Image (tube, rainbow, N blue to C red; front, side, top):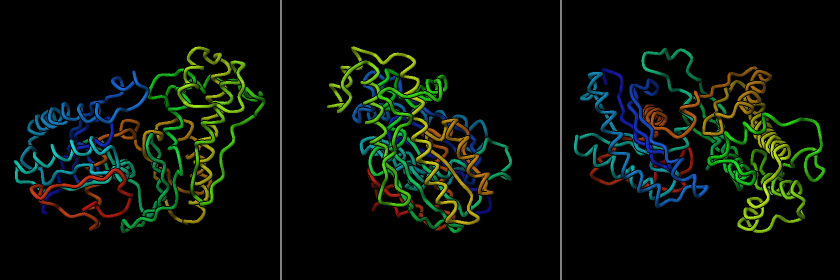
Length: 379
């Protein structure tokens, strides 16, 4: 190809509809995101059927908006392929994005590139605004930490793109733990940012509700694996202790939620619990990354996913990378959360490294709720 490859990318793995136009793996010429956060706030979590219906509404509209901008930029007829997230994610949401993207590509005689959502979060660190230099792009090999509401994963990516999964959560994802603890404390959904803001105002150094000084982090059999269900349970017990309820067993989630709704945790105790939970989650993540960097001399550190927007986590990982003499690469906040630009970047990388092929959209595109990072697209 004599010119730089231009990809239209579509993301619909969960509750964000997004479309972007990405040139040669990093330069974002245009992008649009339609969030469903307000819609799902009333239920405190994503309802799959509602999310899929909203993708039907938004994905075609966003493609139209991006193409208007592409025409303005004079590149509307230069698109080489359409990248679309085909996993992991909510199957209904994935099917909508894959169907709309494939139909749009077929109508214009363009191939499609099935793309992994988690690889998108990793490759988001390569994104840059239109016209910006690529000189500061991350280098491989790298240790990659993908940390979001649905996923917590630690990988090593070699210079040729080959990937080894090192570890990940065996239960709740880090972002899921943030959201569930935030809900216990009466914070709005999604709860990660609200919990972090509450934690920032906590008094430090004293005992936590229930007499603890810090939240325990469960040990796992795998050297790089993580577990966050224990942090969530400990936070629930502290919340009950703070309102004078027996904390031996939090009981069923619905009963616990009702108790804490009727008897909210006092402000000071809520801030202390939020800070302890955030500290415990960050400490667990940093300890695994520390081991991975020590075992992989010369590797940079690349972090992606919605929880990568957490400032204390960024600071802790920055200090860790500096101690190891490595570079830390974290995308701007707008590219930490789900977006389509990262899907364009991941598709570029997979094509360049020979890990993906351009496909005829007329043959259909398969989706998978559990497509693993670094493996071939589902057939």
